[in-house]
Amino acid sequence: MTVNEAIKKVLFIEIIKGLALTLKHFFTPAVTRQYPLEKREPFPGSRGLNALVRDPQTGKEKCVGCGLCAAMCPSQCIHIYTSEGDDHKKIVDRYEIEVLRCVFCGLCVEACPFGAVALTEHYEYSGFTREEFYYTKERLLDNWDRYMAGDKGRIYFEKFWGPKASDFGMPVKVPSGQETKQ
Ligand code: SF4
Ligand code: SF4
Image 1 (tube, rainbow, N blue to C red):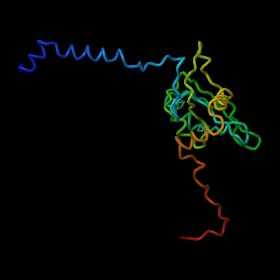
Image 2 (cartoon, protein in one colour):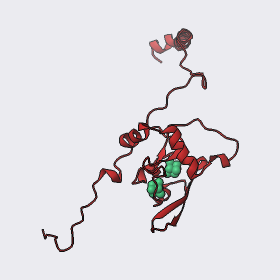
Image 3 (cartoon, helix red, strand yellow):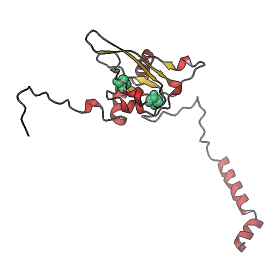
């Protein structure tokens, strides 16, 4: 043991330092927030309650029922049921998420080529039964209307989830017989 260490031990220097630090914090303002009275705005792009994007033009879901999001979901908590419409287009009859099983990884949002599913910034939700956390298509669309209305949804995708299929031009169809060999 060195002389310096011996002096520190005898004079309880480390203990005095610790007490001085505690004393200092008596007179500094507390950083604790009195939640729920005091709330902090969620960080933009933070991953909260799931939502299905409502297409402003049709007023319906943007989802085409391709199932990519469900295939990517590590929790297997997305359930999609589709049928064939009169014009042979796929109809999304049911789109459901078991939110209690969701781990908010964002893979579904990343996988969707149409920007049709989202994680909103809303994190304050609670309930007494499991059923309350089984979100149907209508409830998921409602989440979009509530938490991502207006420009918020557009900015969300532009800023945090690109590129999407809409960022790339569709290949131009050349009439048969007019192709040129390279
Ligand atoms: S955020 Fe992750 S866990 Fe939650 S539904 Fe999407 S893919 Fe599944
Ligand atoms: S990936 Fe997108 S379009 Fe396909 S089923 Fe999921 S939400 Fe719908």
